[in-house]
Image (tube, rainbow, N blue to C red):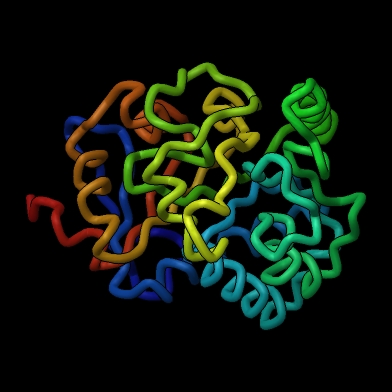
Amino acid sequence: MEPGAPDGGKQGTSSSSRLPVTVHTTAAAACGAIASEVAELVQAQPAAALGLATGSTMVGVYAALLRVAAERDVSLSQVRTFNLDEYLGLPPESPASFRAFMEAHLFEAAGLSGEQVAFPVSPYADANGSSARSARAFEAAIEGAGGVELQLLGLGGNGHIAFNEPGSRFDSRTREVELAPRTRADAAASFGSLEAVPRRAVTMGVGTILEARRIRIVALGEHKAEIVARLVAGAAGDEVPASFLAGHADVQLHVDAAAASRLSAG
């Protein structure tokens, strides 16, 4: 049983993949398990460095984290945070920016100040060198914080993690990238149209992610069932960037029943 899993989620590891998978009965239960682990970490290390993700999956995770922290009287106000990625060229006040997402779903309620949070791209960074400077500064800030204690990740339908699209190297660092058509299409609703979605972003690299002491991936819903099944079956290589995580010493994939619907019963 996964420690802290409110539904007693069942954990197992595929024989062809070293990626441990915990299946929860509901999405809420999966989010609750992640929230419990983060709260326990922060209770033990109030100033822990957390790697954070955005996206619809994380809405439930952060809501659960705020609830669990309140129930257990755990303050999140001293943590350091490092977000995985950000679109390039968006003003920070854009409601579609990941910074705005984090303010709305975690930072404001947790009482985090601007000095405690970091993104891999500075506001208004462009393609004329400032994105590269921001990326280097971001990596230096992670190192200065002593490294990320726990990294949260969502899972893209094409196997991407953060904005590390298929073709990304396992040793890649924080950098500017071009977004895949599927990734832009998935984001279109947040921007009002596909044409409004930025074509480029800055992302934490796979190699950077792998340096976190713990990695927790969350995949929810039937639309993630295919990629979850591929990963658990042992998909490998740069065409499925999430597969690089299987070699990490402390990684777990948390899924709900819908995302696990294509897994073999054996």
